[in-house]
Structure formats: structure tokens, C-alpha cells
Image (cartoon, rainbow, N blue to C red):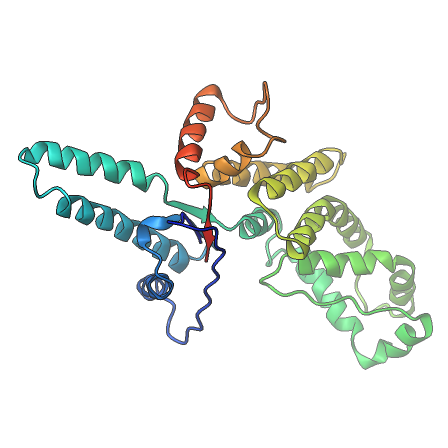
Length: 309
């Protein structure tokens, strides 16, 4: 959660262990507790980054509503001396609208990438299931001596919560193609035909740029603009793949998901502040978008400092 500070440059990290059911109402209360502990007011929040879980998004929206209510309450308390009620209401409404635009709910970039990839190849994909069953089969004791003699490694099984596990499993098989081809010839009960090999090779080629992007995000802290650049480079690499069954659906999903992420003002501000995207005659923003982002970015960075929690 990025926060607009009152005074100094501080990076503040709050972590809370929770044991209760993580409903939106509960998460909202815990976030407010952390803010209170560090004496951070709700109107200092610039943006909230969350995964795409319904409870997290609902909690963020509840915090947004709480923020708006706080601004309205403060406006009413500070305007007791105003004789013109209609003018007071107009002022509070204008203030609320202005400040509410600074409170952004940002979908986690890593989760957005994972969703884009799962759009193309779901965990229930029959080809993935067939390959997974093959990997499970070769782990039987019957085939251990073949692995030992050839110094081959077992392909890792993947976790449903991490798309990259499927890629690592398939890549491991492809890197040991000669061994597994011989293993299948030696033990006909193992099922891995030419269609399976073609599927795996196309999958490995198409998803490799996205696996690289994922690893970069895990190794280093990535700003939104860094992530966006890696996303664009991955799209560029995928476009070079001719006759790959995954190319078109991947490009469609990646472009659609990134378009949604780019609608967020926090994301736009990150691109606006990066000279790699905001330069003379840049087409990242339309003229109207550029003016709007400039106004919101300047307003958000008025103090030129941020807290992080």
C-alpha cells in the first residue's frame, strides 16, 4: 500500500498474522488497525495493491468508501461557520471527488500475468493432464534404474497456484528428449506420442518469454514501468513465433489484460514518470490521457515523498 506522507521520506512495512476467516470486512479492519498503529491517516493512502481474490478487492473497495466518508466528515466539521449550506455541500463534494481520484486500487501485476497465461492453458487442460500423468508414472520405482544409469532428472510436478510449474515440468522433459524417447521405447506402457512432443515444444517456445518475465519479478523489485517493459518485450518475442498454436491466444490475452491494468491511474503515473515511455512524440498516451495523467501525477507527488506499508 503506497501512502502520501505528511512529513518525511519513510518506507513503512506492516505485516499482520491473521487466524480468522479473511472476509472483506475483517481485512478492512486489520488494515485500519495497522494504519492506526503507525499513526497513518486514511487520507494519506495513494493506492492499494492486492491480488485478484474477491475478498481482497472487496476490502480495498470498502477502504475506499471509508476514505470518502472520512473526507466528507472532515469537510462537514470544518465548515460549521459557513452560512451558505449549498456552497458548503458543493465544496465538500468537490473535495471528495478530487481526493477520491488519488485512491487507486491496483491489481497485482504478477497475478495479472498469471491470469493472462491461465486464460490460454488452464490447469484442467487435457494435454497438460496427459503430460502430468506421464511424469507421475516415470517416478515409479520400476524406472529408477534407468534414471540412475543415464543420470537423468525427474521432471518436477507443478502446483495449481503457480502457472510456471507447468512450464518447468515441460521444459525438463524437452531438455532430456533423447532419454525420455528411449525410456518410452523401452517401456511401451509409458504414453508419450509425437503429438505430445509437438505440444510440449510449442508450449515451451511460447511461454518461455513469460517465464523469464516471471523470474525477473521474483528476483528483483520491479516498478510498474519495469514490469510493463518486460511485458512488451515478451509480446515482441511471441510475435516472432510462426505456426505456434499458443501465439495468437497468448497475444490476445496479454493485450487484453495489460489494457485493463493500464486504466489504473497509479499504473499510468508510473509510465508517465518513466522517460522510456514519456518522451517527445510518445504514443503511450493520447493527448487527453497525457494531460489527465499529468494533473493527477503532479497532485499525488506534491510532497515528493511516499510511505510504503
